[in-house]
Image 1 (cartoon, rainbow, N blue to C red):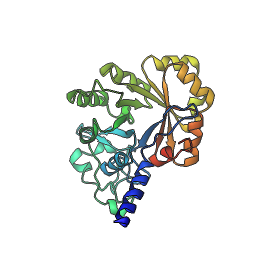
Image 2 (cartoon, one colour; image 1 turned 180 degrees about the vertical axis):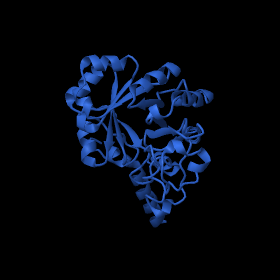
Image 3 (cartoon, one colour; image 1 turned 60 degrees about the vertical axis):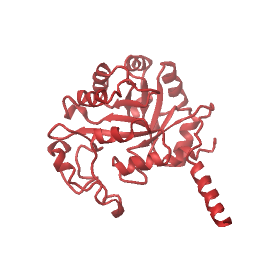
Image 4 (cartoon, rainbow, N blue to C red; image 1 turned 45 degrees about the horizontal axis):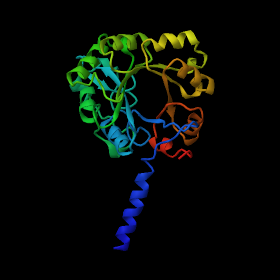
Length: 273
């Protein structure tokens, strides 16, 4: 009995490490976003990655949405299937049936052999109401009408009026963000930026704030000044992509609102806890 109680106590202690929110330097809680799911532990943009993120108590899963040859929405990051499957060629050259025959797990580890590229609808049906979903429209210029298809899928499920901002749409293509915002105005939207975020002007921030609620830059562009200016423009700032404890700690010191990470435990393990 003592052995059983000891195991139970240690298990509870271990799980508690994943339930204590990280705090920024100002004491505010930081949103923990699992980048392509818990992609440091599992093959990215697969159901097993999203399951792992949910298990690890992340606040959001981040997914990349593209479109197949026959107009179906799927989750994959690259515009080709070469890196993360056993296939080759452009995502847009595959039908849904063809792309779901690919192995999207073995590249990461043999234990994940047979993982499929999931559909957008499969993901939102599985996780709506359970965990936040950060939707990135990936290379939307390649997929005319992708904004409408995403909006239609959300509206069909009554997810276009989310509670607690649990659905967010973002893109590096800011025209696409504006198009999406017009289609589903009650859903918060975000603009993604690379290192150019470091030199963004106040005028640009004001323009972004006219249609976006989130300003999400490369983490290497983040400074105290940038965070202050984004907040002054009445947007939140979620920085990407953390792959070490040191990176998570630095962003917390800069008082970002969210951290996008391959390893959710780096956010929860922040020493501020």
